[in-house]
Amino acid sequence: MPIRFVLSPATRLPSAVAAMPRAAVRARLAARLAAPAALLRPTAFKPAAPAQLAVATAAVVTVAAAPEQQHATRAAEAAASEQPPAAGAAAGAEAADAADGPRTASIYTRRQLAIEDPQAFADVRSDTVTRPSPDMLQAMIAAPVGDDVFGEDPTINELERTVARLAGKEAALFCASGTMSNQVAIRSHLTQPPYSVLCDARAHVLNHEAGGIAFHCGAAVVAVPPREHTGHLTAALVKRHLITSTDIHTTPTRLVCLENTLNGSVMPIDDIRAISEFVRGKGIPIHLDGARLWNASAATGISIKDYCSHFDSVSLCFSKGGFNTPLCSQPGQCLGAPVGSVLVGSTEFIAKARHFRKLYGGAMRQAGILAAACLYALDHYFPTLSEVHANARYFGDALVALGFGLDRPVETNMVWLDTAPLGLVADDVAKVLLKARIRAFGGEDTVMRIVLHHQVSREDLERAVAELTVYVATLGPRRAA
Image (cartoon, rainbow, N blue to C red; front, side):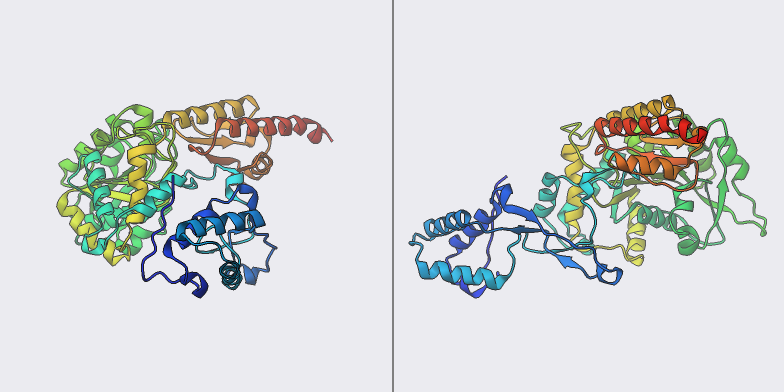
């Protein structure tokens, strides 16, 4: 895609360059960014002391100005300005270049720590680690923006309308993260304490959102362990733990929160329907943490709208590894957005949630550049999650064949590996995976979570299986020794 440079009268340029015609400046920029790959070399980083890491700043890419490239640049400048490349002018431009410092492929430099290139590794720590594509970044750059606090960012407004329509709700609210959209939703549902929130004992809103329910709402939490043979909440469990008493010693349940998927497991729609009918029959609202509802939809074929119909509010996350929707025009080629979640609900509810988002410091100004990534994914590139799920099943089966166990069945994009049958801990497996250029969480536990996404290929997994096969083969002799 050609790059167009727009130089306004307010654009600040070095003095020697400022004297050149604007067309010549544009030609110079275009010629330098079109330099052959051989002319681009990464800046060398030396390990820095811990105190220096926080402030180490370096150019990402330095362009080596080879003589032939300089000549091509000068020729382009001369053609654009319809003037011959005078020696004095060229010398002056070179002097300006030297004064400007190292040439970079970007106008800006970025703060960089001494770490490896993340793209050299596949990453199974989470599906939040996916990176945006160049086309998605271009869409972000080109996004029209305005002040969202005033409701004037056209890109955010379009995203909110689109997701509300997808979920079958009246309105939507763009938030910076899934944690924010969940916590804003919970606070918006609760009115006058004392009150309590009922949720699964493993729920993200309880265990992984920094105690937000207690901190923001002052609410008690009724954490319900799931049934062992189902792995999720049922209407019977909710009935048993719901607090509807007027006894002044109790904290009445004023909100029920469900999560789908939870730890990679899909909650059956029949149980969702039964819980929703019971809870709403009591006049109690119900919220869904649907960060990975996309995975549930891909695994079951149930639409996002059908799932959302059973809830008063739903949080939908865009920063996971991508998902498949009816709006996807090019399945199998897409990338997850880098930032953002959208909360959906009624018009009245979203108006209240917008107020709390402001209170929590989450009201953003020209954030359309972030919303553009979400829209781009919805319109063009959301992957076919069934392929990701198939990769997860392949990896789980291959690991079982090597002698590992599975802590739970593989349903979507998560593999819960049990290392105990081989006498290993998660750290042992993580070190082997690192040799296969795959990052994973380790630790001393015998159960490790492996999360797949569209940027972990079947080839990555086959490479991991090969490394683990060699490693497992050495376990017997080493134990005997």
